Image (tube, rainbow, N blue to C red):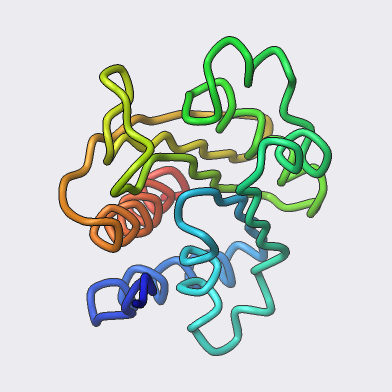
Length: 166
């Protein structure tokens, strides 16, 4: 059984556009992922030359490593849970600090098929976007199976980051 995100032409085009922008600006990016399991980092590094701008990719599936590696607060995890705006905001901020990157993306969600609740059903995904000293969070509710939720999460994060760095 495979949960890999496929690198179709539209996804490759998004990464290629991001590549050109980051190279032209001389800036860097890092990612901290949970539910996508490294799929975003994999998509970003599929472009030749990405080593010029891709700094670090972390998969912090366990809350312990969200705290220990990127500095997510115990309070945020206890109050809101790992799938929340406060947590992805702290994830992206910590990832950018750790990697000394200009931009960052964090993703935490419930890809399914299990793990959903009434408050946070399967397909609930939170995103954190960092650019300079600013952090923006976004929430999406995706449908489909595990791979579809993960694929949609990767595509959304790339589209949103491109909007932010225009």
